[in-house]
Length: 432
Image 1 (spheres, rainbow, N blue to C red):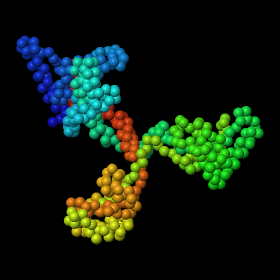
Image 2: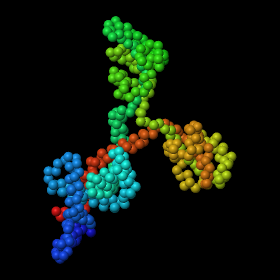
Image 3: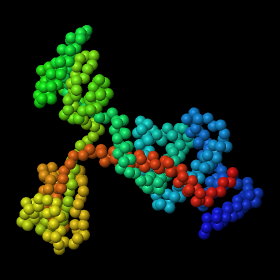
Image 4: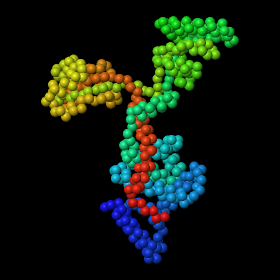
């Protein structure tokens, strides 16, 4: 059936339906209290629904102190919004999407917490502001969550994001971030309050001599204890961990050029001459965790039920010293069905993803070694550690957040186009 034919049939059907209402007998007409405001595919929007939604929209605008200059325009805007809401709900049904009670309750709880309320307090507040306010708010929230799911599946998930876009996003965020901290050491040669040129020359000569000795190999901390007039001289000039906003501004230029372990050029300030050493840099929000790149192989063997490792398998612990040798187990145990060990490469795993026994084993295991075989109902599971690394626990989450943010930004550019296309493909008949 073509779209135009479909539209004609819808029009005919609802024209007949409306005619029946208009020309109904007086006894029925007396009971007629509503009219059709619009038809959207197989659904209708009643005048009473439109009026109620318009009243609610007006109340929300007044609460935000936004004046309503034209009530008719507001009603038209509300009707358009109702039409688009119906179309998106229909699309959700086509995609098999829904919102569970648990999802709604979880979101309500989050909203209550954000407003420093309990859920009963939020309910009471909403009911006091509007008749049956809590249930109306809950229904609106359900619609919002459903439409968000449609948007995520139809637009956001299909939006491509490049590595360059992710890296640029992360770089900008990190430049704007105040979570970076610097571990500094400091040496200060002071100037008298009313320093003469001779005083300045003497102090500059002293700091230059200290800098030269440090560059020739003498320890910065010891030089600080011996010569620095700074407040932390006795602790080796250790200023501890400082955020950017805690660091003196006259250190900024030199600090930007330093890598961990490097010492600055001489820095001049009203108090005298300084040397700083950058010990370390860290992100205060970072949480370093250990990851293991694991490979897995299952040897089918009933002896595992007795938890006694056969001599042949114990010997593998000493023999296998490379990934190539571990992968050769497929050939050595060719009688094991291929699907049993189809996915030998397990990728990078964190300790929390592993059993406590395997965690303990891997924490003491060097790369390119096999862990002690683990007994299972099917046989012996062998794990080989290809590599170990330290990573930021938040890095993957941060990257995923970047991808999502970029997708949403891009999706915002196309969302209105998608909505209009959705409407163009639907049957919409506005009756007011």
